[in-house]
Amino acid sequence: MNWAAPVYLNFLLLIPVLVIFFVFIGISRRKKIERFGDTRLVEKLSSSKSLARAMIKKVLAVVAVSFLILALARPQIGSKLTLAKRYGVDILIAIDTSSSMLAQDIKPNRLEKAKLEISSFIEKLKGDRVGILTFAGDSFMQCPLTLDYGAAKMFLSVIEPGMMPRPGTAIGDAIRMASKGFTKKERKYKVMVLLTDGEDHNTNPAEAANEAKKDGIIIYAIGMGTKKGEPIPVVDRAGNINGYKKDKRGEVVMTKLDEETLQKVAVITGGKYYHATANEFELDKIYDDISKMEKKELSDRLFAQYEDRFQYFLGIAFILLCMEFIIGDRKRT
Image (cartoon, rainbow, N blue to C red; front, side, top):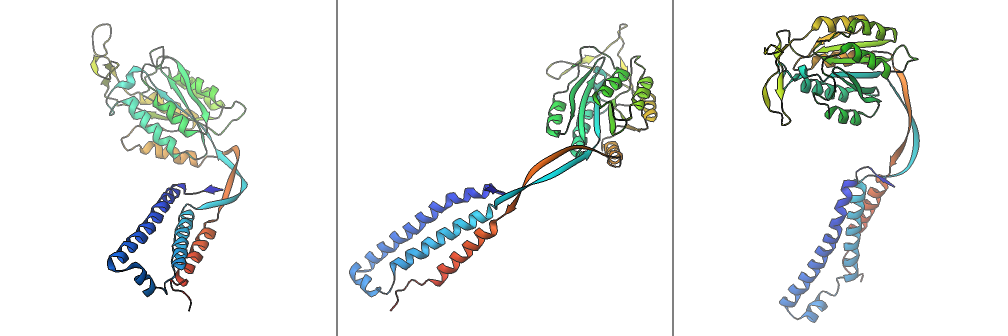
């Protein structure tokens, strides 16, 4: 037997309280009779009252309340196996973790904003496989394609700047690494969402995008930051800013959003480019586009479907309450 709302079973703990209440009422009544007058005389005067019937009425009331609680918990008896099929596309999210993503032209900073957007995006998915790739000078498959959105969000939460051993921003290499994460034999059902400031360090993103296009990958790029530029803060382990990054000449390094590179990558693969906004409208638009794409069958799943049987318990409780109402507390003459 399965219970759809097992939390209501906790109310069964009140049954002993109800029994104790009835016992207390009986003791209290006995004491009142003793104060009223001679006990034997009062019992003779009330000889028409049946103690056995009164006890039966109390038992019926207690049992009826028990069945009402069981009905609230929605017992489910019997089940049947149902085959459910999932359809969707493969979505690989690539997030830039280079030091430039610490710039605060987007609050709280570019990286944290990107993580918030990815988390919101994953919550929208229904049936699609999702994976996460982190990159800076190197690329790493943080989370392979999976239908477990909870696991994907867990991997997302541990992403932090500096986790890649090599500094820099290798967008081209990240696209090539992402291509390896998809199924090679397919030429569709593949989407890459790229979140970066676009400052590539000589890895030829356009060439990588052309290679991805041949594999059927559509790239949606989201630019993090502003064209105006922002200094890169130097952050300690406690998260405190200890100045700003400087070049060899001692001048503060400014990181600027390179929209042209990201636009080119998106256009080559048939995707779109968006600039990150506070309202995250760009994610809604990307999700709408993905929802309209042709889907593939990702998995079959058997699950047990239970049928509610609370009606029986409710019916028994109703019958018991009717019996309690019909039975009188007087002896038959």
